[in-house]
Image (tube, rainbow, N blue to C red):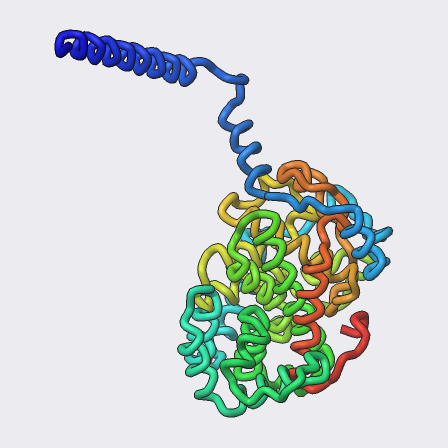
Length: 384
């Protein structure tokens, strides 16, 4: 009996060893065998398409979007000649750059508390108690946040008296847009007095683009919605600093805004914004995406640094969607995103396929949060 047992055991071991050798050889053969002839570039494209995780919209979703946003049915884009495009940062006159940098350096330092809040609001794992504590150090800011959450738009059954609760209800992205306004108020108080309506309109547009970019960054590209939200919030920061530059005579008209800006001031708001972001020592991904956020309308993907390619596309697309839906700011021209970008990431060149009811809700919340914060009320979208 023991002999038979060991013979059987040995037989089983031989079978297992043989099977293992067979599987190893099969695996190695599969590794050596080119499966479909894909190059590294092909695999990169497949990976990009996979990472985009494009929205699987139902017919009902699209119908609901088109019903609530009829402007998406037919978008009237501005036609731009192929030879017409904005100049790069390196092509801008050095004297103009130095003038801007000198004047920016003379600005008062950014509020320490606001910078700390922006940092915390970038991280979804931040301690809510720490955020509440920082907000509470400013009685005026705390009061404005409570005023905002208790506005008509939110229509809460009970009045909110806790700053922490207000922050939770508004959401980190919307609180970040309010912090952004606090920074601008301390940095450029004179601009608000000179053109209050224009100032609020630009801020509202940036807040809505921030909400849109955060949503699309997460749902389409699996990027950090907090980072994309920050980039969206700051994408037009350069527009607040035009008064530092000398305006030229004979302003151009009928051209895309970024090109008109170059003819008027020597550089466009995207480059100004990148210079400001660099001066503020913001991360390179934010600085780069600000600089290139209009490029997907003018240049193919290989003209944008790969380190900020997706982020630049998300902000460009978000900016376009917000303008189509009436969240305009000062820039009214609708520039299409080039077809190469849709193909690269497996998306349909149809904004109604990209916009979702959830995205619309996020954008509306951002819009009314800002309007409630400044006490303007809830006007029609087109007015902002």
